[in-house]
Image (cartoon, rainbow, N blue to C red; front, side):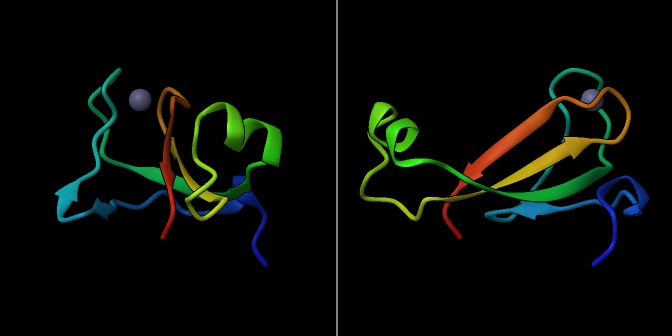
Length: 70
Ligand SMILES: [Zn+2]
């Protein structure tokens, strides 16, 4: 498994939409899988959802976009 920092930033699509950073308008991201703990999932009322989230980290400004499920 490649180290996160060594990952080559790529463009991604979510539900058919091109991913774009809302802060710096960059289109290149690195991905990371995150597991939500039950407490946090309950807090956000995501008990019904898959507790794994995918994070896309902007390669430019490091803003993180989170997506639940999939
Ligand atoms: Zn950005």
